[in-house]
Length: 144
Image (cartoon, one colour):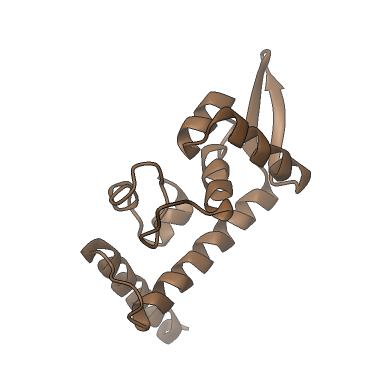
């Protein structure tokens, strides 16, 4: 589990609840967005670097799909490609990690907006996530 997800109170079981192919919260969607796939690739490439097969499995992408996204992520400076002991490793850059943090913030805002407008029927676990997040934000505002 990542620090960003932990800060938002998201757990692995919560994330895998509806769709086993996605490790991020979803809005009862059938397909994943480009941003979600990019975020999954960045999640898989966090740390000291990960192999192509690990990141592909983590993101749930085919080799062709992974390469398409990888080109864009490298061009934007979100992923660094290094070689260690003859193996190519992919690592999320600081810029990529900043994108990931903002992605989680925006996702939380979207989930909150959908919840407030009653446009979406949320699972009990997602409801608890939103309640906990709102309480945490409220406490932070009153502490400062």
